[in-house]
Amino acid sequence: MASYWNVAARGGIADGVGLITAFAHTETPGAEVIVYEFEGKWSPSSEPNQLVTYHCTACHLDTFHDSGYLHKNTGPTSRRWAARQARQHILSAHRDGVGGTNSACRPNNGETLRVVNEIARDMLGTTGNTFPDTDDAYCATKGPCSVIRELRAGVRPPVYRA
Image 1 (spheres, helix red, strand yellow):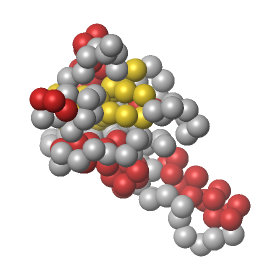
Image 2 (cartoon, rainbow, N blue to C red; image 1 turned 45 degrees about the vertical axis):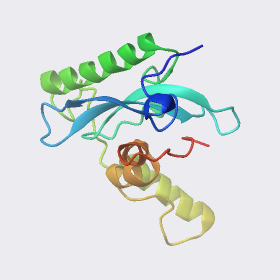
Image 3 (cartoon, rainbow, N blue to C red; image 1 turned 90 degrees about the vertical axis):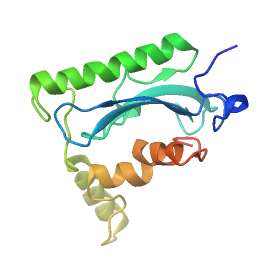
């Protein structure tokens, strides 16, 4: 049986759902790297799992799409690993700068979203965008920032990638 940091019987939103810790970003004022546990699916057709990861509000890294940073939440070892990766992310930004070629903290400023929106408009014959124009807007509405916002409000977010 797995143990979780957030436990409903001790006032948590649900077992394995909630914030674990946050580290101040050393290079981007006001940004932080947040370690959290949540419910998510590896693919839309799979069963939900208890997962643990981190999220950087400076670059809006979505660890679902960056392999190796998302773990099944099986206990303290999983959470320590996610926190270690969060600290390494901050150290990389300090050493190589935000957006640096060798930095793990690399905002892509919506480049991918613009391409996806353009292709979707061509394929669907529409004039509007399928997704928000920027990574921070996408993250706030459909990504990790939206999950973290609900966790901070004490609300159980829907299963991520359901």
